[in-house]
Length: 282
Image 1 (tube, one colour):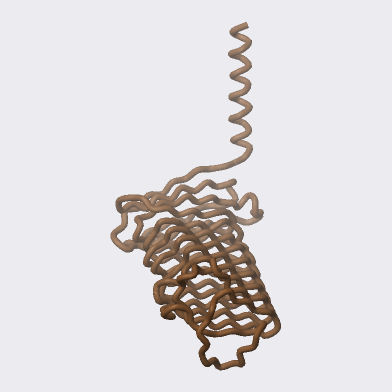
Image 2 (cartoon, rainbow, N blue to C red):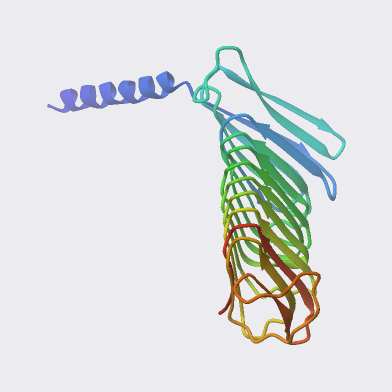
């Protein structure tokens, strides 16, 4: 009986090993020593990229390749590290998929590109640039840095970005900002919805624009803003008592409003051609 159990276990191990081999996955790791304010660039045709900080001066890149239809071109030039997924002929989106898990010094500047995978960065204070036609973007806990995002239809989520310089360009993906503040927070979308939930702090300039998408901005009662909102064909709503001010367009109930709240420390501009705009009091 015991020999039969051992034989069964052996068969199971062989079956599992065969399944792993059939999947064709390959795991590779790259390590680089860099100085302060290094630069890390990763370009991936298919698959996600996740970047997190690690103590010390090491850049550690772990890549899981779906098959032998894709290779990794990795290089270092001084404090710059470049990683590129090199797709071979006859590869498909599935066989060319690579999943990157990346650790960088917290002050590193990071540039990520993927056609369709998730782009994720967190707890950094170096500049972050993320780009991809259909990529989903998730950025969290970034302080005192530039955050640049460019997508076609992928959703974009930014959470807890402080003292930032944020620029987002999207065609149709939904953009969600929670606790995002800084000297500049600018979102341009063609048809995607823009949602902002924060305090409009930092004596900054906030510009949220969507041609046909809706804009919803939620702020606390103590917000200190100079606000202008205008929708050419859509409707606008405002929950705040505003001190009126002069504008370059006619302020009309239901389509435009302008005024100040508190000491008007930050400038807030909400524009849409045909979408609905709502400035909500939390």
